[in-house]
Image 1 (cartoon, one colour):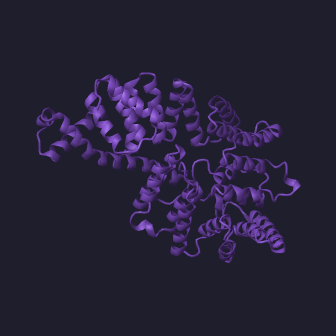
Image 2: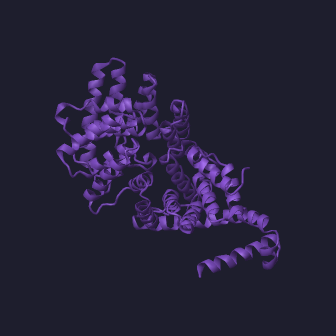
Image 3: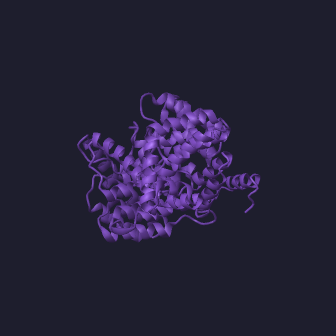
Amino acid sequence: MMRDEMKSRVLKIAAEKFRLGQNEAITGGKFEFCNSLYINLMEEIHTCIADMFLKKHRIANALEGYVELSEKEKKLFLLRQLADEYEYACDYGTANRYHQDRLLGDTIHNPDIWFEYGCFALRMKTKGRPRERGKAEECFREALTLDKNHFLSLLALASLMWHRNYCTQSEILLHTAINLHTEEEWLSWCILSQVYNAQGQTDNEKSCIRKAEVLYTSSHGNRNAYTAPHVLLSPLLKFPFSCGHLFLQENLPSSTVFFETGLFLLDLHLQKEGKQILDLECDVFSTAFDNKWAHAKVHELNEEYAKAEIWIKENLSITHEEPMSWLCLGRIRYLNKKYQEALEAYEKHIRYQGNKQVYMYVHLDIGNCHLQLGNYNAAKKVFLKLCQVEPTTSSWLGAAIAFYRTCEHKHSEQALVEANHMDSKNQRVWAYLALVCLALDRNEEAEISFQQLQKLELHDVHLLLEVADGFAKCGNYR
């Protein structure tokens, strides 16, 4: 019923657009007509799908007491979601373009957007090149130009200056942050202590540590349901598997000023400085779960996965049923391409998590593990369940790949259409659309999909070869 209605509306739009009768539109110049029609209709379709998705998001936010999103905020939200998905997939180039798109128009004057872009620049990996420290510094400085009291930008830039051994600049920025007297002033004092340490000022270092501990205790003693959310839970610091959102939302039992400051630095991917802060904890806290989790994260960021596992297994030797430990272990094994072992860890995480909501990216990891292991039916179940609860381009694409591998091409096409509605510039979606059309003997449509793919940058060599092989089997060697 709905499909028939959509067909009739499409033909009506086409007739109006091209000033053709419906019969003439169907029979005359089929290939050129479809190609032109697709381009004109996709923008409208994407807008409608985006509105539907954001309507659901607004309802959820309204139930939680959040403010209604404006049109500009809707666009920023969608672009950030897409950037996060590409970052999760390690496609930093495309993620970078979406972050840049967020700075178009009036939002170029928004310090929050510059701060988010600066944080992403610190996380961005490019083969053969160091991390974008210079770009990050530029973004943080731009945020401070727009708002000289932007607390998170002051902290981030000060931490980056410390990392680059510009200790005097770091000290000035941290004192500016301290003078704002925010709820998280202890963060500034704790980082400042190590800036003094780098300058050999031992007395000042000890004084700053004492001040940080006092302020931290006071801040957490006064925190309740009516106070502002923890700074590390700010949406500006949220990205796939971000430390603050993962650890602090689980209400860990023994957080300390050093642990939480360390988390902030680890979310900036300044792991050397983060470890230095974590090492300040005295022997009393040497068995604390949170400290071991944070040390495991340091090794994970350094791609020292065996060392990271050791820290997590120490936690599991103390309490075997701690869900966060199993999540961390699953993530480490996934990054280390130990997919079967990652699945085992994630299964225990879900079991011990009980009725609590499981992190979306955990489901994506599980689905991708099944794909890598060839468990396509299991992958389908995981991705389709995620599509019902929290649909994303990644979840629909995962389902489509699983269907394609089990030769359920019609279902695969439907999932790819959903993925394409959410992100029309996803290279892998277009590649699989070409493969599905070839499998269904629709060579003209496969050609159109391949033309779209050529406009984008696909770095998956194996997938490109598979597409090329598919065209070759049909006698198309162009």
